[in-house]
Image: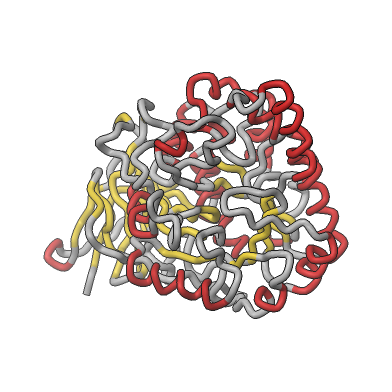
Length: 446
């Protein structure tokens, strides 16, 4: 029997922090108590004095690039980086090559992950203008949801037919996750900048081309369609102040039919950072203004935004070093997301309890993930120990992404993840990922 006893931790769970111990047996949490006494010969004992013990983070939006784009990243390399960053479960998106738009291609990705993933995994089924029949075959018990791109992005899967969208929203009982940017607005903005700059558009124009208006137009249409059809809608990577008026904090999360996500980069960077970071902070949707970021933080803390995720999307340095028009959008984030949010805690922007709510509890609730996202007896032992006062700096020697770079390179974080457990296995300990692929397929209580 694999038995691990974590002692003297500040346990963060369901809105409170309390001192206590947690006992793991095999893949489950079997006891949570003020004090647990066992013979040291019966178990591995980890003293977490001075550190927080939180559930493993659940990242509801990643792009791990396998199959077809594995020069940028793959399930093995990126899940390794995820567990080093305290993310123990991920939901991956369908814009791989080939796109995951048939049940057969979708299942192939699960088979790859079963062999290679360090973290727990699920993969979204992709919708297109003409695959409704395949979408409706998706099993709600073992697939996270349906993904629709309402704006073009990497591996263009744009769904732009109104009748198709209404059919998808009306037909599936599953959660529908959407990327919202209005394509017509973007193309019109792009044409204006091309007229002015030709092919030498500066990256500082990115948030003006993929504008706040483009985001709001698309998000508001998606919300209106969800209200009309009764669909279960989850809007990914919101980036603007104006969009926040579309969401409510007046009802409990469990009763919401429309939920909202913000990503770490939209909480961390602003358009001022394009001057120094360039294409390395080029994302879709674009990083917006300081005033947008301020309102995103307010909405996150007051409950209009439900989830913090990463939209982890690696590209090579060479790809990012190209001109603005050629450089792809996206960047790697899973290794640094949790500590970045703890840094925001040190800055007084968010409580530790709220970090756990938005990165652990709420993704589990929104997707109805079975037995994960909480520190409870009988739940899977996906756990993370975070020392809030053990500084370290991000550099090329400790970056685990296959692409080899991070938008946080050169940043010193005050907090360090010291241990990560996936299904009861200690997969990470102080900058070392053990060669244990402990990840399991996520299942859903639907």
